[in-house]
Length: 289
Length: 322
Image (cartoon, rainbow over all chains, first blue to last red; front, top):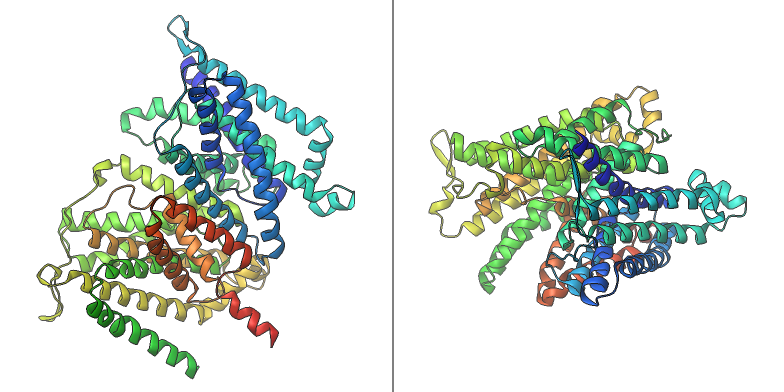
């Protein structure tokens, strides 16, 4: 049991970090970022290149992932989403654009990094063993702790800095924020960059454990969507809750349902449908209208 | 109206007579496969377009195509039903599932609906991997070609295995189904049901308040949409004679949605045009080898920047200027 909970927490911390970026972008610009999974993969490959190929320390790789993805996110917002949002008749057009960007990033990753599965050497060795009841490699613990620290850092950023306040105001009411003198364009760009940065960081963290490959982008986006549906789209606390809940469900499902074959996600989806029938806006989302 | 009729006649003439003649003359038999795929994908996107018509973004068509394919494959290989009977059965199965799934999820709107349908695609793939009847990752292979279809002892469609060129037969089958699907779609849009759907697209609360049964309509249109998806999937299986859990994945679902967007959401023929442009474009770009996806996606992004409302929106602008 302890093992299941610990695995769930570890998975949940990473999932929450992915969902945070997605929900931040959604809340600021009403854009569903299909390319989020691809950004995550890109971040992983950047860390791989820096750490495994250039032989620099892991922390440098992580920072490189964050910086490169943040720049990429800012450029994508500035060059692509902003003009399209201004010109298009329907909100949904941004989805097409996001899907196009997802394909584009897939192509870029394929050309730059190839299609092979990549990983970096373990950053710390050894396994934590508590009486055979809880067994966990130290590097997983380190990554889990780092992920939780980053979530805490992100919350602090959103709560206590000027940029965070501006972004929260934007998420609440774009028009009102603009009238209060918030530079909407600027903070949209910062928000998008921050969301992409988070995706890159998770990629950098996870490349040390599960490795990374080209095909991981799409499924990661799908998982992120499940999380923000559980928690409610566009709500930060919801994304964190959704991430941890999905992590727990996956961890429990893999153990309990193992005898029936690989049906964890079928079960999660079925329960998600029941849940959404009762509460369409998710745990903490605002009802629409 | 008259102009429309001429347009339809020309279109039918081109797809049924001119295209086969040209292909015969030039010997580009591989084009049949491409065009067949375009026709089938267009059927699937017709369904997606219909869900757009009630104001829902459907990124789950791949799931229904996969389900339809599996239903057809399982019925043919394990029950021994003729391919022609499995076609409507696959569609009906998908429609039934769509009712079950649609009842809860159609209450969702906007990106929420889009997200859950996308999740549905991934879950269907995982289910196909896990369930025993689908034979897991190995998939179902060596599915027989469609047999002959007889009505009162008269052979209407000959056995595909005895034909000289099953490619042509499949092309004609797919095109006929596509024409039929779009006729149905056009009929739906221009009927009472279509008017009611438009009312849903514009304002669901308002429609409900003047007595439109929104819940019933939503489920009905979603079921019809999924019927199209299942149909397309079933024919795909017959052509490739095999199906795997990865036959239709998240990318295909997204593509179905893109076909609709590119063609434009305001026109019945939009998804057909969008499918043609994107699929053919993709095919033509195969000369670029490893840069294929890069060029394709760049063009798509560029198109979004220039024409964010779809290709057929070009006609809108002309109309606006007059």
